[in-house]
Image (cartoon, rainbow, N blue to C red; front, side, top):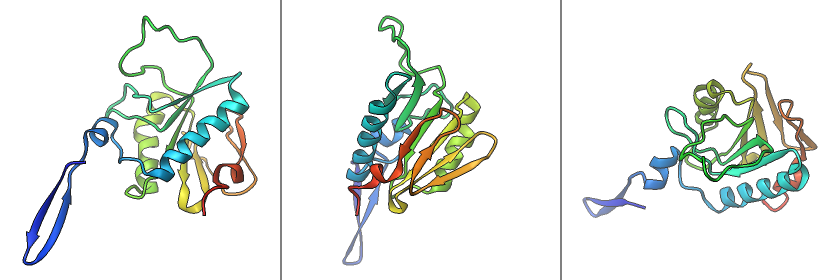
Length: 170
C-alpha cells in the first residue's frame, strides 16, 4: 500500500493513498473477514447451486465506472477460452458486495443503483459482517434484510441459511 508519513510538530500523521488494487477495482482492499466471507459464500453457493449457476469472484465488469463485484452470479454456461474479453460485457444476474470497514452501506447501494442495475443486474446483495446479515436490493427498490433463517433471493430463487454464513464470526 502506498502511503506517506507527514510530520506535524512531534506527531506523525499518516496519509493513505489508493492502491493499484483499489483504483482498478473501484473498492477498498479486503481484510481477513471480507476474504473469509467471500470464499465461504462462493463455496456454499457452489455446493448448493452449481448445477444452475456459476459463482465468479472478482470479475471485472464492462461498466462505467469500471467495477469488480466480490461475487457475480451467472446462469451456468460453457465458457469459451478463445473469446474471453478483459472485462465481462454480459451483466450478471446478481452481484454480491461485502462491506469493508472503510465503506458505507449507502456507497454500496449507490453502486447497485448507479452501476449494476443499469447493466441489467436483477438483484444485489450487500453483506454486512458487523450485523451478520445480508441486505438484498432489487432494481424496483424492493429491499430485504436477512440476519436469521433462510435468505431467499426472489430474482434467482437462491436460498441459503444465513447462520451458516456467519457462524464463525464473533
